[in-house]
Amino acid sequence: MSWNVKGAYVETCSCELMCPCVISMDRGATYDYCRITLFFDIREGDVEGTDVGGLRVAAIADTPKVMTEGNWRLGVFIDERATAEQADKLVGVFSGQLGGPMAALGPLVGEMLGVERAAIEVQHDGVRHSVRVGDAIDFEIEDIVPFGVETGEPVRIQGTSHPVTSDLTVAETTRSRINAFGIEYEGKSGFSTSEFSWAA
Image (cartoon, rainbow, N blue to C red; front, side, top):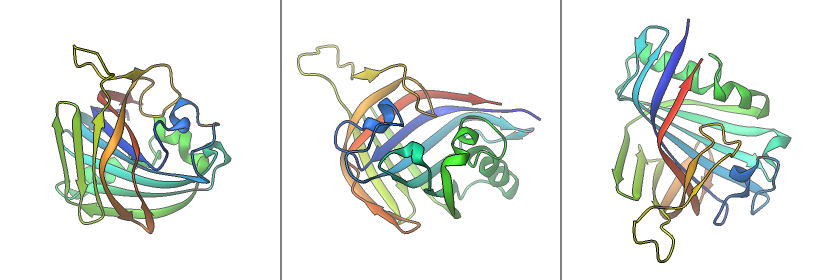
C-alpha cells in the first residue's frame, strides 16, 4: 500500500543561529549535542487508505554533535484527535516503518523513547509560527526577514539534505519551553516551510 502526506513544517533546535546540521548532517552542532523538535501540520494525507488530513505530529530528538554518528534518542507525539487507526498509520509514517524520509533516519536512532498522545496546537501568523504540545513543548519561531528587504520575504536556504524538504526558511526562536521524554533544552534556531510533501 502507498501513502502521502502534505502540510506545513516547523522546527526549533538547540544550535545557535543557524544550525550547521541542517546545512549538512555531517557538520557538527554548535554544542556537544543537537536537541531538536520537529513539528508536522498535516493539511492532507492518505496512509494505506486512511485519511490523516488535519492531524498533527511532533517528534523530539537528542543527537550527538555530529548527527551521522547515530545513537539518536527519539520520542513522538501523535495528535490526541486521531482515531486509533489514524494514530497507528501516523506512527508508521513518522517512525519510518512505512518507508519514506523517516525510514532513512532509522539507522541513526539508537533509542526510541516512546509514542504519546497529546493535544497539539499550532498558529501560523505571517512570519511567526507557534507550537504547543500538551504540557511538554511550547515554542515560537520567527522567520528572519533580512535588513532592508522591503518585500518582507524571509531568508531561505535550498539544496539541503534535510529529511523533510531541501528548501527551508531560516528562523530564530523567540519563545521556548521544551521538556519531553527526558529531553530538555532551550530552542534557539529554527526552520519552517509552508509546504512539505512526502510519499512512498
